[in-house]
Image 1 (spheres, rainbow, N blue to C red):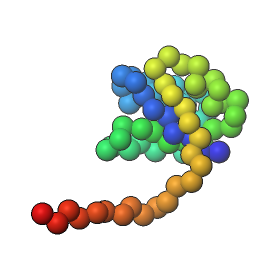
Image 2 (tube, helix red, strand yellow):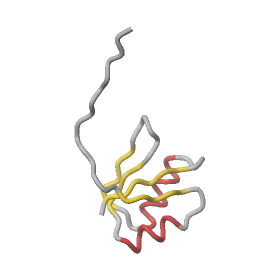
Image 3 (cartoon, rainbow, N blue to C red):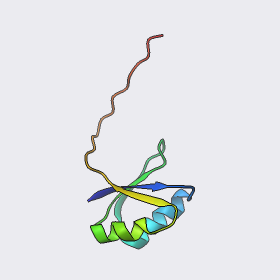
Image 4 (cartoon, rainbow, N blue to C red):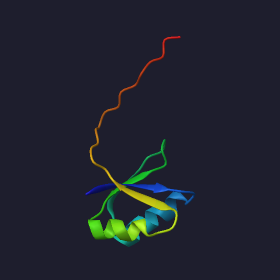
Length: 73
């Protein structure tokens, strides 16, 4: 299952290392949000969620496109 890993003050390289240590695969970083996404099973997600400073949430739905709103001003 795909999960979002949110860091609270932990460096991105350290977060990625923790994901790999937990057994995560297909890791993707987001530049804008600072989140990481990865494939984990339920046990791996629980193990990663136990790491201080990390929040792990399942991704229920995701889309490959983004809508941009233009402000008329």
